[in-house]
Length: 296
Image 1 (cartoon, rainbow, N blue to C red):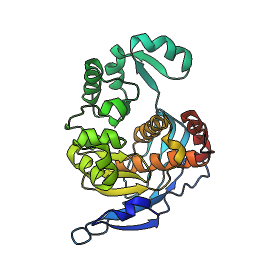
Image 2 (tube, helix red, strand yellow; image 1 turned 135 degrees about the horizontal axis):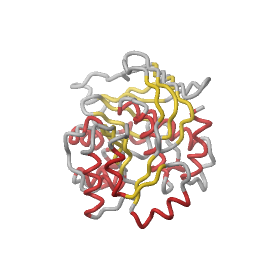
Image 3 (cartoon, rainbow, N blue to C red; image 1 turned 60 degrees about the vertical axis):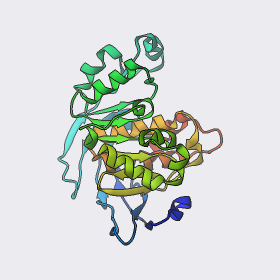
Image 4 (cartoon, one colour; image 1 turned 45 degrees about the vertical axis):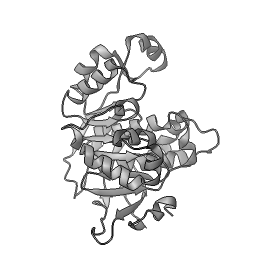
């Protein structure tokens, strides 16, 4: 069931379960549920998922780009085998650094002054949660985007007054309805009533992948079709759970996954982790704690 999405006027939705093997441990077979979307039926052919098997062998995956292992991909991805260790680095305003030092033990901690240099060594950047919306934050965001050819996740405050650029092909935007409305010059109510159209407009406008959060997560790629991920859970409406999704997605991008595939896989893992928990009283750290069981 696609809920309100199935009622979208002028759209033909063909849904089926697609078994997508994401081997995230020695013996895990993650079965993801996706829907393919096409429409209007008179002008667009049925779009099918561009993959059946994604052989991605991960070891020790944690949130916020803490990945160690090897990537082994099968066609049609043609991603070369990789073996590397990705270090988590957290950049915060100088006044916040003492708090972060006491709360986070594993990541490398930097102030904003060192963020641009560190970004040049990164494979993926997650920008936005807790960033702020002042001129300094906007300048940092723009500087990070321009710092290299890293894959990007732009979320939360990084979406504020964001303008299209030549970076779209390597980026995933992860707005909720209100944030997407501001990007498109529409109201959040309009986005809620036109979720498919809104996500696809965003993808075309920015030349990126747009992951529209909410019931029935939508992953739209510019010219590449739309995926609906059916693993949402009511508890994901709580504060901070979207930041967890940002971290999972950044980890998959750091492993070399194509942005649209990474977005769909991250939304699936995020939803399955939340579904494995009691929904009442669910908080973001609960989802993080459940990820090892989901990822294997």
